[in-house]
Amino acid sequence: MIALLTLLLCGGILISGLLAVLLDNLVSAVISAGLASLFAAVVYVVLAAPDVAMTEASIGSGLSTMIFLYAIRKTRGKD
Amino acid sequence: MIKRIVILLVLLMLAFIFVNLAASYSEQTSLSALGHYYVEQGPSELGAANLVTAVVVTYRGLDTLGEVTVLFISAAGVGLLLRRTRRKDDHEDLEQGDRAEETAIARKPASEIVETATELLLPMVILFGIYVFLNGHLSPGGGFQGGAIIASGTMFLLLALPESHISRLMIAITESLSGFSYVVIGVLGVILAGGFLDNRIIGLGTYGHLFSAGAIPLIYVFVGLKVGFELSAVLDRFRKEDSGPL
Image (cartoon, rainbow over all chains, first blue to last red):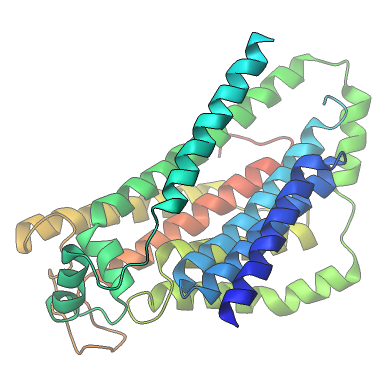
């Protein structure tokens, strides 16, 4: 059961990672990258590493997504 | 053409390495000698109920100090780079209209849902961050995690109230004082106990209580404050167009 859940979540990481690379819209790509981090955080909880999961959830999917969005806003139109 | 061949070669080499790693993987059934020592001696030696914290803060304390330093350097780099961009833009009047439009977008108020949710959740998020780093030696979490959660609280604040002002001076003072205190505790470990960042400079207390595990809670309070304020400062610098020195 746990193995199946882990595999499903890892599939989620792969799909959102691919989307982050393939999507043309920068904002959508950043959101997908944050989604990959969120899936990874859940995988860490399932694999009994709550310390790492906390860092991943708050920094990986929260703060870094936010910083990327600010950076996109600052550089918009300059590519 | 040559570039493509090189890329293909690098990819093949990486694939070879990873296939080898995956093929030779076998699940360990027992701890390594060092891990065994940590599990056997850690609780009685350092008095921390959360063994991960005992390893991260004391046995591998120097690594944690290095991580804090890395974060400090990146925050300083962000500050330096973003200030430079601003100065360059000051001399370029070409993009003035574009810039004004951008500022207008930045100052658009958040929706009522976001504002209300922030008013409700912000105190809880900050309190949870403090809980996480105060209980780092008892439950999962610690200075880094607590600091990151506090910075998420700052993120909420900046999202809901884009006009809100964060005092750069307060951030700078808190950050420097906590970093300094962290190193002072480390040096006190050399003088009073077994070595740099040894947590036995004060009594270990009762195993499993809030005031236990020697200096670990103290160190985590300083690390949590430093990480939280540093990440908040990075967010604040990214948000602002006209960021002053302090």
